[in-house]
Length: 323
Image (cartoon, rainbow, N blue to C red; front, side, top):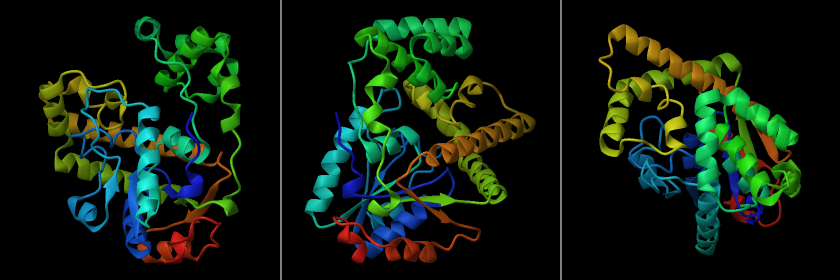
């Protein structure tokens, strides 16, 4: 079991393309902080364009952690992430710095804010069996199966998140107790005034425009070629890596000779899925009592946002904000 890290760190979150990274770099420079990625796909090496990883210039300006940890064909769990995160937070604080988590992966965010119970070890034979059923019968059938075993988990888990549904079934099989009954201690968070957790909120049209621009830039930078190189080098990507928006759309057609029309349709598909992801993230963020919302607009005024963050009353133990 991993304890929360919210009392030892600052957290900047928000939907994809909301400007978290640029704000985090200026905040870190101002208060003497180091950045820890809260992105479940940025842990994979060579998956750079589709994850919009920090630039080399930003990494030179401020230390960045929890990026480029494993190869794209390796599995990487929340437990692996938290083991490293706990060690890094203690090291950063030991150097007199501020640990600043930055990203929008909901499960990683919840684990940092409220802790995480690793539960029983994986049962790979069971997982392969369920995945075979999923391949044959689809996500709706998997969801119906979970409704029988753990209705509360079925209501909580998004239909597209088949990995979490399989894990919930696995826990019931191994322990006889629904996952939703085992992790109630992680449902209650602290008040926003007692921690330093900030989420950027954009007007919907502006956020969609930012997402569309980012997707255009990714394709211009060579996202399709990046996916081709990954497949050529690794073959099959890990379960998590191949489900990442921007990669999962390209993988099925990676060997095709794509026309300009095909590329335009592919780009729009990635943009649409990214906008859907942003809406799911925003819904998830609203469930956290820890979050202090920060309203932002184009053009993004990084300095003003950093001023807002540093001017908030600080809870005990986070005196790094006084810098």
